[in-house]
Image (tube, rainbow, N blue to C red; front, side, top):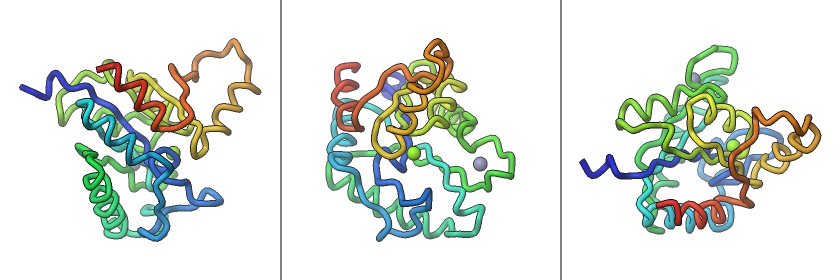
Length: 193
Ligand SMILES: [Mg+2]
Ligand SMILES: [Zn+2]
């Protein structure tokens, strides 16, 4: 099977591909969605380099009743269309719609969405990367066995500063790599193929 030789990469959405909404709010419609600089180009680089890409995103705004599944899927349809137009392809978007209090197995920092993808597509998570901007992304990656990569867009600077302030001997929540943004990460990953 051709897919067996594909490298897999997981991407967080908000703060990695698109701007985080202000005040820890939610992207509720397409007007509230704006791509980060060079993000579309980064998705293109990863795609043409032969990576199979999954999006892994917490969308608790659904569980909180702030927006609907239909609104989310409208945003994702438009986002994928822009990516396709720019030569990028996403294999599947996994989202957690649950309220943080629900205790579901999919909300990051839990690794449920990564594990679901591995089960559905049949690959070894230990051979994957997960790019995110938050501590919950790094913890989810580590719990699932993926290699965590931190980008400094979105909440990435705050996440990075947590390391500076925290005990430098505590390596348990450290990403394997840190990049300025998804574009520079994709340029590095390009050579990992
Ligand atoms: Mg994020
Ligand atoms: Zn969930």
